Image (cartoon, rainbow, N blue to C red; front, side):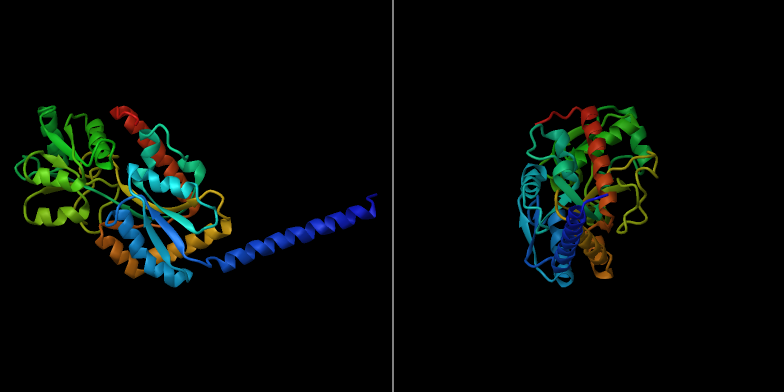
Length: 327
């Protein structure tokens, strides 16, 4: 038989547990009580910056607090990521994660954070694609013809990227691997420079954004062959994917989503996830994102975590196959 003291002990344990639950519920209901900072690892005008500024006014309406955008560009986005990874886990510091973040673990040997250990996913926000494009003089009007031409002239064609280890570099190298061709890589300072070089005829192939390619194709300065993502773009619905056009299984796309420091209370993550899901899927925000060449896409925190894990693994494998050296 238990002594009377034990009953009193368990009574206090129960009271304490209820008190803790009450505190948690209270924090969820009161959050947020001050402005929230959203860090972006790229400069003003970049895609993740534009997404953050698109969402900010509507998030203010739904959260009742301003969303302040803080640009910390450099090192492939890892400067901003490191800042958020080390921030207090209180829900007031967010990161607009980009696809480039999942490249860094394979590209940089001494990152001051572990992407999966130190950051907790909240929700996907949008995905994006590039357009496999060629100079109009190239005798290739579709993906199959480009592959045939490249196989007939190994090493003679060139594709441009926004730099070694960039998303467009890996798009080109994945195309080479899957198509069993050798289109030589020419790195540029940015995707715009790569597109300009293709228009000028200095290189034959590039991967400009959906938004950038529209006017160039209309002016017959570029020929668009296919989009690089698994699904077609809402802005170019008649353009097939690379996979549909002859290279089955090809898929290289960009993505953007919100993450927080590990340790942020689950109820706050749940609140942020619900608000992002509501905001991103409003007709107004959907239209604005599509206009930027993006596809609105939200997720649960668990789905986003699984996606990030798969992206890190895929990028590490591809970078190793390509032979990009770790910095």
